[in-house]
Image 1: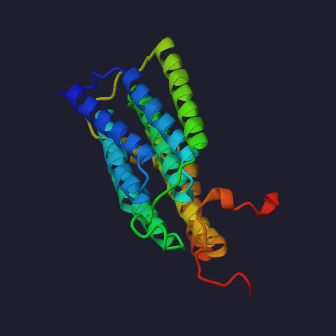
Image 2: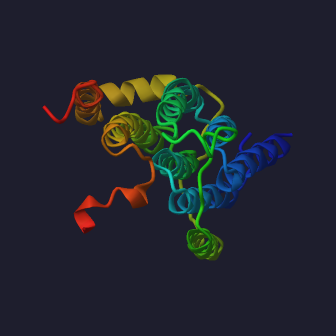
Length: 103
Length: 173
């Protein structure tokens, strides 16, 4: 059990984080950006849990990851409610078209 | 055996994440995110976090992803004429694609350099194969009691706020 080196967990998490950042930048859709942000939060959780393997008495990393999941759930519900309001007002899901403050 | 499972689930997670990045249809992206979450949950199990893996599946796959698919379906494009065959299509500007690619690759190279360059000195012994639920429960009720209660209040506030924001009221009135 647990013969996988720590660096491999960290590299997988770094790859998922970079892909999530690229998704959040690339997509021209509010929910597409939200998908990228969720992926980045998951990648951070992999890091926390990989380091928590070496802390079997306290499990601080796993507890921190649990709170990250709670905050992510709260964040995504509020974000979706705000996206619904923005869609009802502007009839669009493109972040570039919601530019009333720039005009 | 364990290494094979680790690498196959890592490849599953990364390939489906890349599929989200390159797919034009957001519904397909949401279902690929489902596969990514399952792969990440398997990585949690392989790192000895069984409770976190079950939580991941229940919260993300059972809650967040269903919510996102609802969100995608409720925010369909208003002009049905041009996009009737591909209603969830997301336009991607070439400049934005270039910047996303540059930023993602640059961040990955930077993080990989840091990870491979650093020497992690781990002092504690590696986690044994016993379940972590008992430890997590005891820690949540003793030394992490205040963050636990704050998380409960945060969830209550998020529930009330989301229900208030999503009420179908007319903002003009």
